[in-house]
Amino acid sequence: MTLRKRTAQMLEHDSSKAPKDRLINFALLILIILNVIAITLESVKTLHAEYHALFWKFEVFSVIIFTIEYLARVWCSVEQNSLHNKSMFAVRIKYMLSPMALVDLIAILPFFLGLYVTMDLRFLRVLRLLRLFKLTRYSPALGALLDVIYKESGALLSALVILLTMLVISASGIHLLEGDIQPDVFGSIPDAMWWSIITLTTVGYGDVAPITPFGKLFGGFIGLIGVGMVALPAAILASGFAQSIGRRKSKYTKFIQHILSDGKIDEVERWQMEELRKELGLEPEEALRLLDRMMRKSKPKEEQICPHCGESLNLKTKKNG
Image 1 (tube, rainbow, N blue to C red):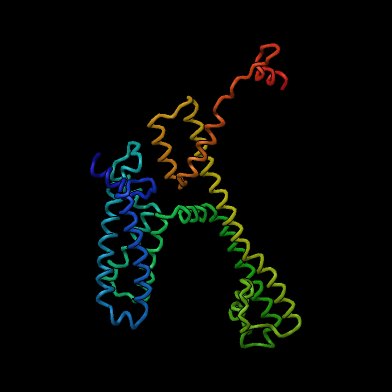
Image 2 (cartoon, rainbow, N blue to C red):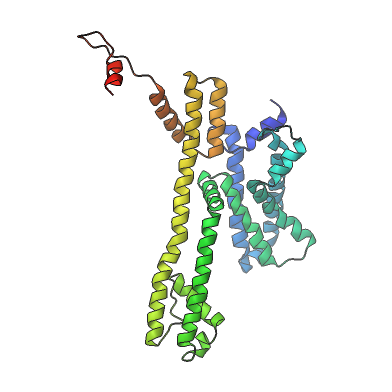
């Protein structure tokens, strides 16, 4: 096994790997969590002033590890993708533009930007917190959620457009009804948008509220609409998440049907099944249940003989059917 292929196997997250290889992924996972904790604590001024040197050393250490990880993943990405007559350079560029590779790049980019560009410490700290997205590599659920958001982006965008439309309509209506009575909060449509936002999102802080009968009636109507508007994106994500899981299981099931067409599974096909399982983010137990179910369906029924006429009962059933 080449060093590049061995590196690819060590960096790949898989619960079925050897304990030594899983330890590397576990160490990277712990480092990500410690980074989020350190960046959060660093925002406390007293802690930052007292432990500034310690925070800086830990940041340098983390960036070195994350940079080595990023470069190693780019280097061995050709082992994870079929070349299809493409050069290794083209495959690596394609990997660098993938969502997970961009997340890895964002995790280290703020540090190098801070060395050459003067930036607000708070803004830089928020950028460093984006390392939290690296956890999606180690969580199939988070990865599936990002996939759902990407595939349902059209529906979510439509819901956002509807929400913005309702925001403008509600702000305009309350401005018309309450603008003369409360000019300090409803005197203009932009001022009234604060009330529209907290009403449509059903937060209702109570700091701004209509006082006229028609204003209260209009506010209640907008509040009822807001309940549905908040539930709409959640319903889209829930439906998309269920469909995504169903598509992944269906794809894995169809592949099992294909390899069971000859009645057996060889070592190459087992390896292909495992690669597909990891690609789809299915747990080993779930993949095993799907395999067992398909093997039971593909297993031919035992032929039963009629004790009276000696004919096959299976054949009789087919004829009668």
